[in-house]
Length: 248
Ligand SMILES: Nc1ncnc2c1ncn2[C@@H]1O[C@H](COP(=O)(O)OP(=O)(O)OP(=O)(O)O)[C@@H](O)[C@H]1O
Image (cartoon, rainbow, N blue to C red; front, side, top):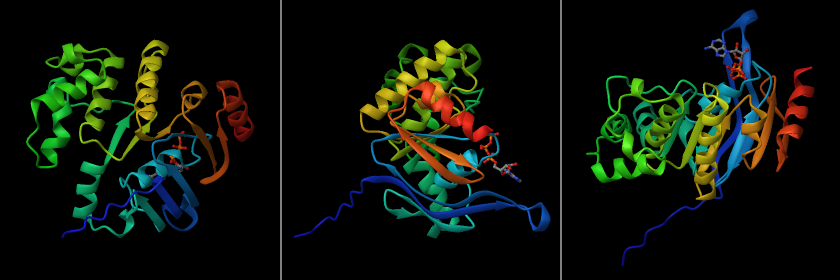
């Protein structure tokens, strides 16, 4: 008889004492300073803080886009800080999804081809139905053949979300996903993220926008590279007030 061991953790991403410093000597900036936090599985966490507080650096380290100088990053129990470059690349392609403020779609490819790209990069033959279903899930079934310039900003961001989701990642990381959108398109993108989180998708999102942060399950606040507070179930007003005190 063969036994299969499946590790189920309640934590999507665990950061254990991580630090990241840019530059050296007098010019050194400690962008992330000894941060320990668990991002829960199936939960949506927003990361806020003043400009330069280390939000993007934290997100990039948590997603394996940047190496940490110290500490450990565990994604669904796997220590990615122990991974070699090739392993880390494979892990980024299959186990995490990333959505950026500027969408980062490839202009010469159709929506469908953009969504299929992570599967191709992971060496898998993209199934047309999987790609179409993923586009349908973001409400763009009828835009599969459009190129990014033929889509609105909100539609482009939804293609980017579909691209991030096509590999069924354990965690979706989003860096200012609504930063380039008008309020209607932003609301639509946030509704989509909310529905994904309600369906069990783990999401970690950096944002400046209290309205966006308030749609998450919890908001953590950074200052000078350290986590200084966490709010659960707070509305936009409470989130904005907390951010304002950190910006003083
Ligand atoms: N590649 C880099 N080289 C040098 N310093 C950097 C680099 N990236 C970030 N920093 C510095 O690290 C600190 C944290 O930057 P980071 O972009 O993580 O902050 P942030 O909170 O995301 O800021 P913002 O809200 O303005 O985007 C800042 O002081 C920044 O200048």
